[in-house]
Amino acid sequence: MNQPRQNHAVTRSDKIYRRLLWLYPQSHRRAYGQPMAQLFHDQCIAAWGQRRWPGVVSLWFRVLPDLIITSLREHLLNLKGTRTMSEKIADLVSRHSTPTQVFVRVFAVVFLLILLTCVVVTFILPNSYASTARIKIENHATADKVESYDPYFIQTEFEVIQSEVILSKVIEELDLNTVWGKKYADGEKLKTSETVGLLKARMDLRPVRSTSLIDIRVFSDDPAEASRLANGITEAYRSYREGNARRNAAQVSKNRETELRTAEKKAAEAEAIVARVRKDLNIPTPEPSPAELQASYPPYWSAKLEAAEANRMFESLKLVKIGESDSTFSPELEVVERAVPGLRPVRPNKPLNIVLGIVVGSVLAAGAGLLAAVIAMMVRSKATRQAAIT
Image (cartoon, rainbow, N blue to C red; front, top):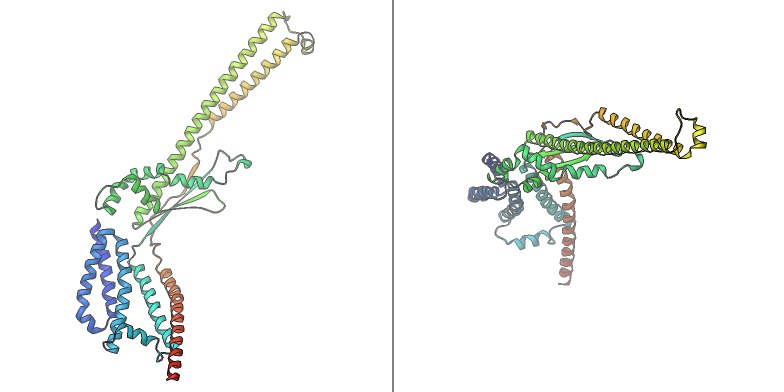
């Protein structure tokens, strides 16, 4: 599985490097071009074997500045014979070079160095695709209580989605320890903690503004894998919330059942007290009117009121229990949009990177050029004063 990727990385880097060798003079290319290309090829294979794409990128960061500097040096040697590098630098800021010429030369060198570095890095980086699943979640525990609104609800759910509880289920379902072990660890199976770290680095969670929607975005060099990961995370999170909702519903039902049995017991005890007081006070049958009972038999009247309240509470809890039994189970999560494989890579953004290289290169090159121009002016001024003295 790694061989095609290695061939792709090494082949692309070789092509770019061979084209950059044209920066050297023709005589230098004839003498050293092939050995330099072979050396770079061997270094590229070694870098890939050690660290994959990061190793190749690191190699380019070492090679590219040296290539540009040495190519400029060889051109200067061709133009000015065998003069030393220090002599050429002195020429750059000598009295024979105007500050404008110095600025242009330094600007061109620094700008090309930064731009070429940016272009090379951009084109050797692997393409990355993104897939996004969109879900809708509700905090039903506080949905009917505006005063108990939780401003940290979404952030808390973000941490849950990225937790090992959720991601380990995705890893197990897609066998990522084995798949990514072949991809990144030369076939050795990864530990779940290592795979969790890799998966978290590929995730991007974003709330949709002014809604209860969340985008679960996953990046991968394989568009099909990106969609599988995004949908797998969504399903694992939905199962987690459904499990929590069912457990909470079961606990609420159990508590309601306990309250109902307690209320039933209190109602029975209150009825027993009414019967005992009626017997003790020898209440006639049929019973007198409520006014007469209240006036002549206050203990009995009080017991009847307490029994009526206990029965009312018991009947109220029975209705609540019946309503909960008839209600449908709410999973608290809805998948609004499932992830699909991306058609185009989202990383690297080649046009943007090149534009940034141009902008940053221009700014830094202008700063370096101005500094060199100031030094040139100082050298010219010093040389002029010495000439005047002599």
